[in-house]
Length: 480
Ligand code: NAP
Figure 1: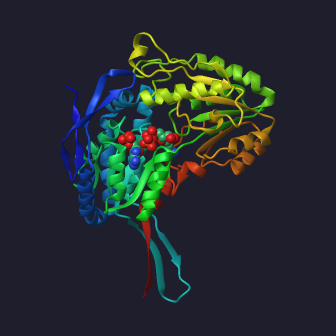
Figure 2: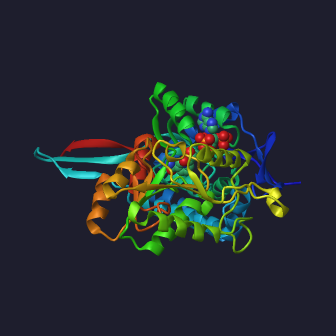
Figure 3: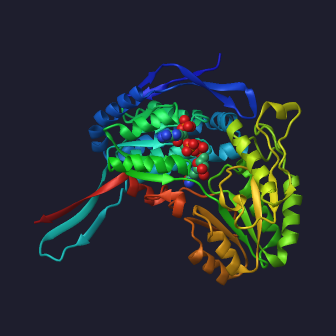
C-alpha cells in the first residue's frame, strides 16, 4: 500500500479521501496517496493562519529567520531522498532534481538571513528634530498556488520570503507533483514553526483555488501556472482588492547571431529547449537564427539533439525524462502535428517513444522544426514541451523584431560576441529575464525573477524583490 500524505492544517495532519500521485516514467508506480482537500479545509486553514498571524508577525525577524535555517538543515539531511522523490513524481532527471533540491535549500538560507535585515528606509527630514523612517510589516494570510514543473524550488521561493516577512501561509501544490512541497511543509513542522503559520492543502485546483481566493482572511495570492488560470484568479482577486502576483506562460526566444561561439550556442539552445523535457517556464521554444548561419546551425542542432537519451530520469545517462502526464504528452504531440499542418519542416524527432519500458511512461522524442515563420502557431503559442521552432532572421534588427513579436515576455537570450549587439539586446528585449551566451533557462535565487507583458503581473519573485510582495511599509514621522 503506498504511503498516505495528509494535509497540514493548524499544526495537525488531516486525513480524508485521497488521490494518486503516479510516476510519469512508470504509470504503474503510485508514488504516494495525497489527501484531497476541500473548500471547508481551506476555510479552516485560513482561520488557523489568521489566528497564528499576530504571534508570528510579532516574532523577531532574526528568530523567524532561524526557523528557515532549521528548515534548510532538515531538507539537507534528506537531500538524496528528496531528489529521487522529485524524479519519481515529476519525471525530470535525478541530477536535475537534485540541483533543484539544492536550490530550495539555498533559498531557505538566503531568506533566513533576510530575517536579520528586512531593510526599510531611514532618511533625513526637512523639519527640525523630526526623525522619519519606513519599516516593513507583513501583510497577513497569504495563499500560494504552485505549478508542477519545479515542485520544490517554486514552493520554496514563495514560502521562504512570505514567512521571513511575518506572514502566515496556505500552500497549494499542483496535483501532479504534490510530494516535494509536502516535504517542505513536513520540514516546517519538524523545525517547530508554530501551528497555523504554514498550512498545506492538496486537491483540485478549481475547488481549492476558488476557496482560497474567497477565504476572508486571505490578503494576498501568489500564483505560478498557466495564463488561463492566472487571468481568472486576477479577476476574482480584484473583486476583493487582494494583492496578487502572477507568473505565467512564455514563448521564449534565443537569438543566434553569425558572430556567436557556434559550438557554445548549439549547446545553449539544446540545453534550454530540451532539458527538463522543455517543461521550464524559461525554456527556449524559438531559436531565431541569422540567415548567414541558419542551415549550418539547424544541422548542428539536429546532430546534437539526436545524441540525447530519453528515458526514466532515475537511470544514469538519461538526458530527458517523460512529459509530466498524459495531458502534457498529448499537447506535445498535438503541437507537433500543428507544426506540420502549418507548413514547418520537422527535421528531428517528434515521435512518441513506444516499446519496452517506454510503454510505461509519457515519452516523446525532442522535436526540431525548421522554417517556422512568425504567423505559425508554433511561433506564437506555448507548448511547454520539447518542441523547438527554428526561425530565420535577416539580421540582428529582424531577429529582435521577431523575438518581441509575441504576447509573452518571460525570458530571452542572445548568442553573440558583439558587445554592442549585447547591449542593444539588453535594452530592446521585451522580457523580464535575459541571458547572454547562456541558456535562456537557469536562473539563480539572489535576483528578481519574473516576466513582462502577458507572462507576469505584480511584483517580482526571488531576490530582494520578493520582500516587496510579502511586506508593506509603515511610515513614521517622529518629533523629538
Ligand atoms: P495550471 O494548470 O495553471 O496550474 C497551476 C496551479 O493552479 C495548480 O496548482 C493548479 O491545481 C491550480 N489551479 C487549477 N485551476 C485553478 C483554479 N480555477 N483556481 C486556482 N488554482 C487553480 O498550470 P500548470 O499546468 O501547473 O503549469 C504549467 C504552466 O505554468 C505553463 O504555462 C508555464 O509556463 C507556467 N509556469 C510559469 C512559471 C513562471 O515563473 N512564469 C513557472 C513555472 C510554470 P491542479 O494542479 O490541482 O490543477
